[in-house]
Image (cartoon, rainbow, N blue to C red; front, side):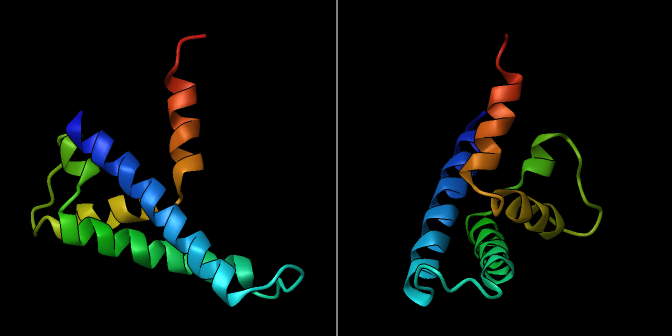
Length: 97
């Protein structure tokens, strides 16, 4: 359960940093490739955060890589890069009706 709390906190943090950096680069009305670049930035930040703090949701599920722990950390970083909205929607689906 502790890993889920850490993953949720990192998702919020990555989303906040991505939005902050995006706000510096782009002014309202200037979209261009904003969505693609913001997604790439979020993915990089999410993967770096999970590698740095060794967060691995895949290992928490009992799935171990025969090579090393980094494949699970990279996948977790990509999940986290989806942001707090994604995490919120998962929790919302898990909540009893």
